[in-house]
Amino acid sequence: MSDAPNPSSTRYPAGGDAFPHKDLIGIAPLASWEIHYLLDEAEQWVALNRQPAKHADALAGLTIINAFFENSTRTLLSFEIAGKRLGADVVNMHAAQSSVKKGETLIDTATTLNAMRADAIVIRHSSSGAVQLIADKVDCPVLNAGDGQHEHPTQALLDALTMRFWLRSDSCPLSDEFAKLKIAICGDIMHSRVARSNILLLTTLGAEVRVCAPPALMPAAIEQMKVTPFSDFNAAIDGVDVVMMLRLQNERMAGPFIPSAREYRHLFGLTPERLKRAAPHALVMHPGPMNRGVEIDSSVADMLERSAITRQVEMGVALRMACLDVLTRRARGVEGWNSL
Image 1 (tube, rainbow, N blue to C red):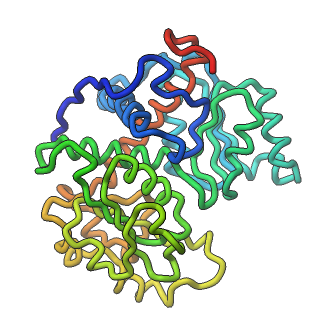
Image 2: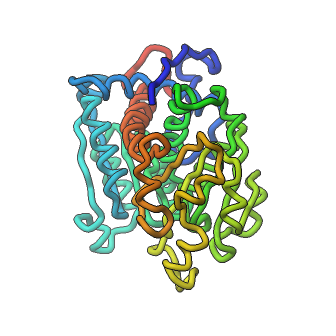
């Protein structure tokens, strides 16, 4: 896929008014132009990351703490690389090594982190709302790397950045507008914070969003989120431009929600035959980690011209660089970014 250059944007105010938030807790509070602003900012870092020398000094002298109370590989590594490429000192804190295992409360942990005078804290936690609780107790910006079943905002933003580059590529026949997209998000919708954040972002940008899951994994009243629910996978992906697959969130399930992985694949697995029901140009996405042979076949995941799964990983580093850069501008005294 060849990527077209990004034209300069005038869709948002100047300076700090372009993103007037201390933290990035979720997509829900963001206006469409604030989303576009972060995507535009990320594009410079995409370009940097494709150069032999991938280092910038924008955050030199700053300390970023990645406080992960829940296991992660991709997100933690992505944030660590993002911080280091911006020149920051990055410290990773794992729950298994923290005082939380000794009975320390989350508020005490937040107070401790604040006393260390970090310049930004990235938090992943298994409980919905935990990130906001910490953000309310610390002075520096807080970025949500996923909290329970609530939100995973940087995943939705990197997914949007991936779609934007695809929309501008020679391989995509569509116009450069999210409002023209038909997107199907398929899998464990009920337990997925990725699904929630993507729904909020894509509907804010005007896309048509369909969600598909077995009835037991479809949240009640999901229509209130301006999406169309399906329990028939074939119908859900009929003619769509993007198929986003989600894994079964077994670690968040209390009891069996599906009869078996084999039956789930039979009804909801993305196979080459099923993909033919989507538009001929349809993009395949997955936030990872993938369960190959369950929600997606390897032959689909590895399609060179259709799968954007590795591109999503690439976009994740650049998008997180943008978020760290933007959220620390006030503390760094960047011109036009006055204190809140």
